[in-house]
Image (cartoon, rainbow, N blue to C red; front, side, top):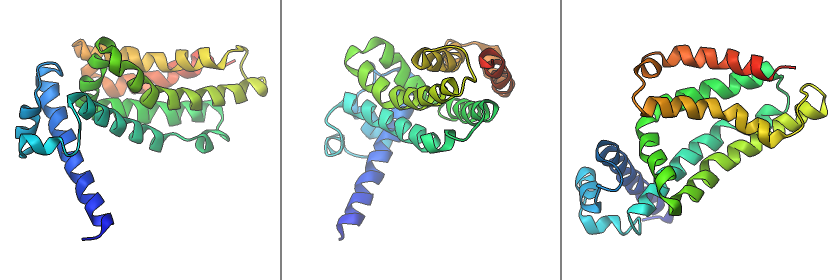
Length: 200
């Protein structure tokens, strides 16, 4: 059996475990979930999980890595360098809102631990948010250099730009029925809001 095929099998088994963990944790929370429950949902023996993950925390880091991979595939500096602000907003908003909607169960698993688990909060931030902020800060710096916006702190602007997404996601997690039922409407309104808020 080739090394490539072995690696594909290993990755497939890791994905199976991650999928099972997302399902179980989203139903009952991270702290109440056991390795045994994840293994049962995945249809494998308890001990098999330890061939792929060292602990339950390590499984959560695997979930985070999956989110991070999806994020970095969507965004790149090359995509943003030639965009005007309206096009940048359009490129940024729709994928982010679609990702929150499509990966809502995964995000429900990750974010409570980001807030309550100090050992995991930094890895979550570094893998998901740091690459995003680097990209947005770089783009805002380009706008500043071209004198297209007045503010002088790209790090501040990047976080202000991202904060409405966090707010809507938290409202949805807290059970805001209007946000959940009108996600497409919020997506459209978000583009208009950001463009007007940041235009010169």
